[in-house]
Amino acid sequence: MPAIASSVEVVPRSRIRELAEIAMSMDGVLRLYFGESNLPTPDYIKQAAICAMQQGFTFYTENAGLPSTRRAIAGYYRAMQGIDLDPAEEIVVTASGVQALHLGIRCVLDPGDDALVLTPAWPNGSSSAMMANARVVQVPHPLRGERYAIDFEALEAAVTPRTRMLLYTSPSNPLGWVATDEEQQRLLDFARRHDLWLIADEVYDRLFYAGGKLGEPVPSILRKATREDAVLVIHSFSKSYCMTGWRVGWLIGRRDAIAKATQLNEFIVSHAPTFAQKAGETALAEGEPELLRMLERLKENRDLCLDALQGLPGVTVPKPDGAFYLFPCVEGLDDSFEFCRKLLMETRVGLAPGVAFGNGGEGSVRICYAAERSILEPAMERLTRFLRAGG
Ligand SMILES: Cc1ncc(COP(=O)(O)O)c(C=O)c1O
Image 1 (cartoon, rainbow, N blue to C red):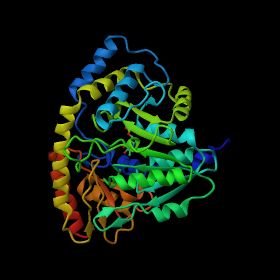
Image 2 (image 1 turned 90 degrees about the vertical axis):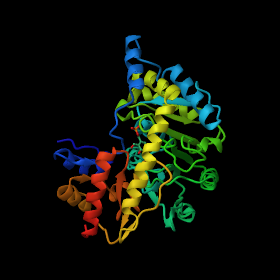
Image 3 (image 1 turned 180 degrees about the vertical axis):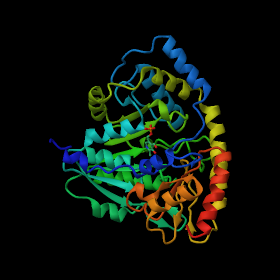
Image 4 (image 1 turned 45 degrees about the vertical axis):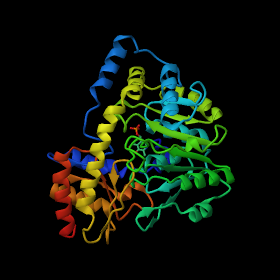
């Protein structure tokens, strides 16, 4: 019998999904394991999709996405980041952030290349690199005092003649860490010095609590990079606009990479759903008031969870500046999957095990605090009771 290709057999299962599958077979679970809010997509976006369908946006589009959607994304970067992008040559609309990441990675890696990934990180980047038959080298963020940092010495030491790319995520899933201005500059310098592609996953850039005022985005790496730099930015409508199920995102990068990504899109998904692209345009144009309300709620949720966990004996939880996750580290924990399984069975609280996020993740659990208060409050009460009782 022919076997499954060994190159894909090596791609591990998502351990977040593994835990979620157990939880989905149970009733009454307080679900904090996925990276999404339990709020539905706002009505104005749904209406835009309905309207788009009625207007006939139900046909194939360009592989790079509708020109109007790319113009809307370019306009958004001009307004939010002060960056001028060429919508015709520097942007591809993708069918989600996952697909942007996959497409970007596919464009820069050859079989046998090395891909550096800063971890703990959402596992899809490493898995996409493996699917491109590359070798993944995970370099963990060390916790220095109250803040996660980048271990630039470890990064230098990890470079080989086959290293082609470095992936980092800021704001980070699962850490909530946000790269400082200096860290961004050093990452860019590092990539330039070693002739690497720098892939920046910025899908959480609007979920930022440490800016001048709420609603300010995390400054994109594109502010520092030139358009000739080997930089790719991954983005998505999912997190800022509660559009996880719509599967629409974008990829920004150097012209040659975007041209190749556009061409490859034909063979992967052809393009993002047409009416979802139109709805995305409306989200970018009209989404600020709703986004601000969501940010206020998320910030309160973050503080509620921090209050519950900080001060618990044996629990370390740095205050995150972005995204919607806490990643508490539990002293003595060496099997986070088993911890989450037991927590689920005994308390019906579903968290993501830290081991799912690669090197540096074991020993922690990820809490997504985007849920409503009516879910978060009992979940935190049960979790803290469980932790106090020794897990
Ligand atoms: C860091 C990161 N990047 C990208 C994505 C992709 O989001 P989507 O595929 O829903 O656009 C996610 C989703 O959880 C994420 O956490």
